[in-house]
Amino acid sequence: MVIMKLLPVILLFYLFNSVIAVNKNPTVFISILARNKAHTLPYFLSYLQNLRYPKERLSLWIQSDHNSDNTIEILKVWISSVQHLYHSIITDFDEKPNLYVGEDGPGHWTEERFRNVIDMRESALNHARKIWADYYWTIDCDVFLTNPDTLNYMISKDYVVVAPMLKSGELYSNFWYGMTSDYYYYRTEEYKPILYRENKGCFDVPMIHSCVLINLKTIESDYLTYVPTKIPNFDGPTDDIIAFAISANRSGISLHVCNEDEFGFITTPLEKDDNISIDEEQVISIKLDILTIEDEINVVEPLKKELNETSLKSLSFMPDFVDPYHKRPMTLGEIGCFLSHFNIWKEIVAKKYKTSLILEDDIRFEPYFRMKVHNLMNEINVRPDWDLIYFGRKRLQESSEPWVKGAHMLVEAGYSYWTLGYALSLQGAHKLLDGDPLSRLVPVDEYIPILFDKHPQSNYKEYFPRRDLVALSAAPLLLYPIHYTGETGYISDTEDSKIIHRHEKEDL
Ligand SMILES: *[C@@H]1O[C@H](CO)[C@@H](O)[C@H](O)[C@H]1NC(C)=O
Ligand SMILES: *[C@@H]1O[C@H](CO)[C@@H](O)[C@H](O)[C@H]1NC(C)=O
Ligand SMILES: *[C@@H]1O[C@H](CO)[C@@H](O)[C@H](O)[C@H]1NC(C)=O
Image 1 (tube, rainbow, N blue to C red):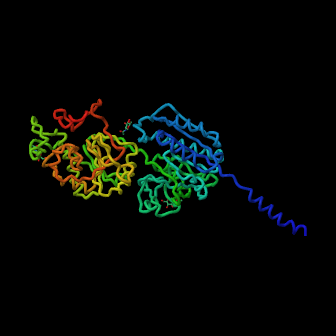
Image 2: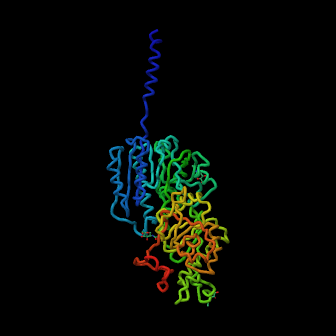
Image 3: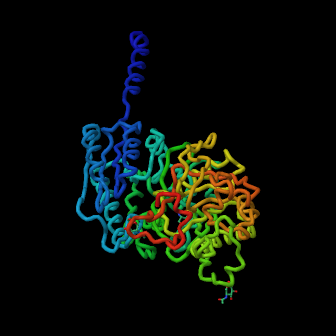
């Protein structure tokens, strides 16, 4: 009887007891390699700090070396303000050398740099095993986890190895769907639908990198390594992420990438050509869609070589432009430059390229040029009638240039000099050719503003009755000249000092 009366109490006791027995969050060891990341670190660290996960269950190991910026200073300031929140933060900083032997710059990966990265990643992984962390999480500083539940989500998936899918604004991401037999990237049909989240879920893929969680409680995880020489009969390149992917495959471990939710972003890696200057080719045009992955560069040879007295006679200059002394209004360089651009316009029309990017030599790219171009081109649908977008130019008018309605990166172009780089639509190329500039030649950077009707010299306009080119400009600009006129080292093909009248009106 007594027992019957007590039964609800006893049941309640057990129930209550089981409810209050809550597990602590698993311990996660986070490995961060930071090199020359001063420009992205503040964002990276803020997102890391904002993760909804008890910080006392997180241990960080931050390695940084061979920097040519203030990466280490930024890390130190951040660590001193958050150190007490985390279970531990270990640092391994080497402040001295800036570059590896034989390295040209941040985009250059030498064999030694690869080996060093492999060693750092492997020692971090082994350290996590040694301290019995439940999870090892490697996250690169160009990853921005805008979703604060990313870590909880990854843990909840209960895979041996998992990555959240990250977007970059272009085709780059932190996973591959295909890998060649010699371990290189291979584009497949399945890639884009996953990237664009048309196909949602968790996918078994041959490669994940940059933000990867490993469940160290699993026996299988013991076989994972970043070191190629630890993998029997491995014949691939000396590359940490490839070795890791192959070690997983050889151990029967699937790599998962999940896109069920939005997790965050990854920036496109610096490529060697992000700061190249093209010396030999005077003008190159690149189809925009190839700015993403496949580099099919359509190089147009400089025409200057072909210029001679005979071919010059076939050209006629705009009367107002003729220099009375030289009987020629433009330098040979300017003429060659015009013809190079003109030939590209012809090629664009002949090949019906929808969108082209035309780049001169001697240009300096803004960091993350490709990503910025991609973002800008995503914005262009607010002006579907656009013809030309300046990526680099010299603004000449004081008057302000209005923003394109609905855009954040585009302004209506005013009178500008230089044609460092511009995107051209097929329609724009048609308009530039239809103006028939060879019969009344002016320098190309005068011609374009005439056609978009912003040239201040009204007498020029009458030679070109149709001036309806829709010209916009990136704001801020994405390209700059390597040297400004007047700076030491400035040499220009197009600005021969013999004929200078068109520059007298500006402050060169
Ligand atoms: C290992 O790679 C092979 C060849 O690509 C593939 O068929 C197999 O499914 C992979 N194994 C795992 C566990 O992912
Ligand atoms: C890239 O820029 C750096 C710094 O300006 C320079 O030292 C390096 O030579 C450049 N690399 C290439 C491949 O042009
Ligand atoms: C001048 O250039 C034209 C066109 O490029 C070429 O056909 C011609 O042979 C050249 N003449 C001389 C003398 O080089």
